Amino acid sequence: MEHFGPFLIALGFAGHALVSKRIEATILSMPMAMAGFGWFMTAIHESSLESAQAIGLIRIISEVTLVLVLFSDASRARLNVLRRDGSIPARMLLVGLPLTLLLGTLLSWWIIPDTPLASLLLLAAILTPTDAALGQSVLASPLVPERLCEAINAESGLNDGLAAPAVFIAAILASGSAGDAGSLMLYAGMQVVFGPIVGFAVGWCGAKLMDASAERNWFSVSATAVFVISTAFAAYFGAEIVGGNGFIATFVAGLTFGAFLRHERVFTGEIMENEGRILTMATFFVFGATLLPEGLARADGTMLILAMAFLTVVRMVPVAISLRGLGLGNRDIVFLGWFGPRGLASILFALLIAEEYPSVMTEQIASCIVLTVALSIVLHGITANPMARAFPRRGSGDGGT
Image 1 (spheres, rainbow, N blue to C red):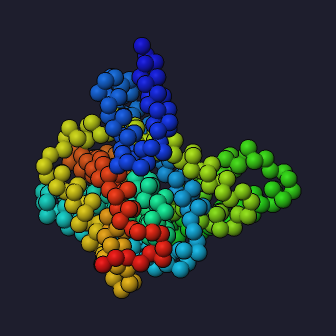
Image 2: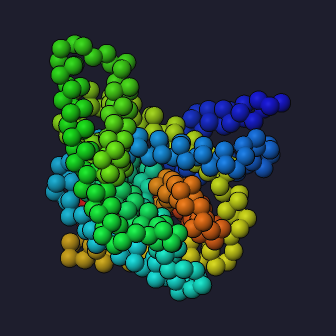
Image 3: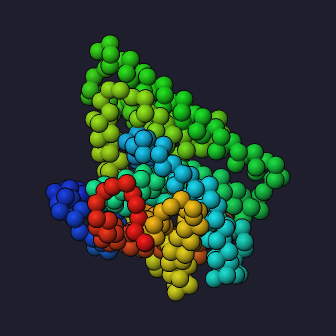
């Protein structure tokens, strides 16, 4: 019976694929279904994974998934829309993100004042990045204005990389192993400067090489997936080698690759989307099977209040402030503020910190992160289609009042 569990998992994944189009029209999102399926499997079938094995597995899967999803989403971005309305994601990243980090830290300190301030900064930093995969039906909806879709896509693609320095600096401070302020600032600067440089270089070279190979008929269509996936990981690891942020590099590489590539662009995007989808399904399944049961078991009313605050006030108020003066309607501002779901990046950052700085990842912090992601999976999943239908048609993005 040792193969019974994997057999059920395979049937579950296949079953979801068979009814995926039907499910997309309901409030049951793919992350919700996979996390719930993982939790169900844990309840009916004793897992053979030890805790350390489970953490290692989900860390690897989530890291690989995030790299592929970032590159895929960026390579299919509508750059003409971003050029025209780039001020929206720029404001959300440059103004909204720091305000989210600040408000999250202060509100956490007010709700759980006995926790060290550096640990609260770490919690806020881990829960600042957003994950567009949790609202994919919104981004794919023909009803939602293009500029809102591209703003959400660009923000979710870059904010995890921009939040990464804050996450690791907060972990260093919380662990008591902080060096001088100059070293920390240098680390943060290298992350946000070298990442885009490496990403642009890899993306540009990848597009030019693929075009040159295709023009000479050296390139087999069946090898497209190998080349594109390799390009994504070359950007990630190349940035990490020189001290840049790999996630920023991956997203910038995807933008550059999609902008300069002339051959098989649609097919390339489909390949990356399919690879990313199966890995995203696996990530949320493992999350539901491993982290979710333990996190919920340790959660209490205080953590529930804090998790809800991170999904609402901590996200929506800074976004509203950052978008002032851009002429957006109230509906657009609420939409952009609400659709900042927490998912892959928050899971990955929590696991990385638990591995590198285990003393700072307390049960309270871990429980709050898991609970926030779990609530986000449910709430953003069930509101995605109804909020998309609130827009009468896809147009210029003029919001309602």
